[in-house]
Amino acid sequence: MEVNAPHRMAVVDCGTNTFTLHVAEFDSKRWKSVFRQLRFVRLGHDSFRTGRLSPDRMRRGLDVLASFRETAINFGVTHIRAIGCSAFRDASNGLEFVERAREIGWSIEVIDGQKEAHWIQEGVAATVPSEILGGQTALTLDIGGGSVEAVLWDHETVHGRFSLDLGVARLTDWIKPSDPLKNKDLDSLARIADHAMVPLLGRTKHYAPQLIVGTSGAFNTLANLESAEANWQPRHVADVLPYATLRSRCQALMATSKADLASIPNLHPDRIPYMSMACALIEHILGRLPSVGMVLRSRHTVAEGLLTETAAGWKGLEPKVGWEMLTDL
Image (cartoon, rainbow, N blue to C red; front, side, top):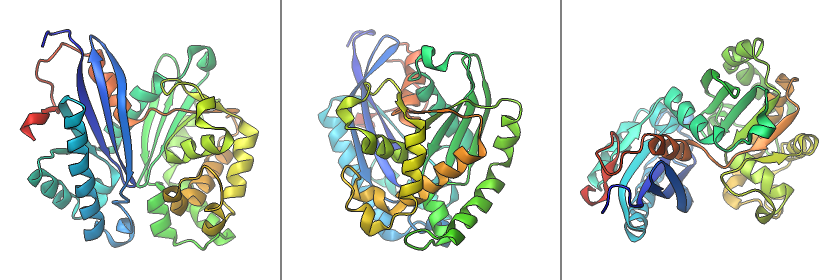
């Protein structure tokens, strides 16, 4: 293969709720998405209460990794990289899953919250059109299962990266909310969120955000409820979500039971367990940031950020730290 010939690499994001495979084709300093697959694993289910990953969730995760490997081979992937985030960091047996994954050929790199926020921002920033961002300060929010990564930034610099213990699986484990959510559950969420957000809110006093860029299953679901996927921008461009409609929808969904959520078109069944909590969290954060007047949805997150960073330093097929040849797995 010639040095500058296109070839395929893949990132696997082993998240607390979902595992995602993203296959991309590299040509010079650019990458192009070839294939994405998301599988609901719920690896961190109950782990923030018990402190351990459950055996059945671990088996599910290993099965998905085995499936991803076959898919990557079928797509002609040459190099692959797997990363693990909050559930791996917090569970007492998180490294046990890493070892079991290694036995079936996977090397999972467990990253800290700062690295996760960095890669998320690398992916998100590339999707926000300059004519929308302008001179505004933006706040990127990635609402995961175990943590929320928040990045305060503008077109010139990043003013702060924060990894907050506010993931929806974590909040659900801690609060054990009623169905539907009751005022006592919302009070508990507010108390936990306000404590976790102290560093972020302190920074917003100096850099008040006018724009939020949301990236996660919750924001994607809210976008799909707003309009069909075909009516949105291409994946590499962030979409504008109507601000008033978004807040109204969050307020409605956070008061909706799981049974009623199941009857809503375009709401994936695997999103139901945490959707009300996610909406309550989004509404709480927006309520704490009165300077915000616009919300975007970006479909880029940590995997796309890693691909973007790799492309920026592209020097052909020379060895890259963290990447492994698929044939070595």
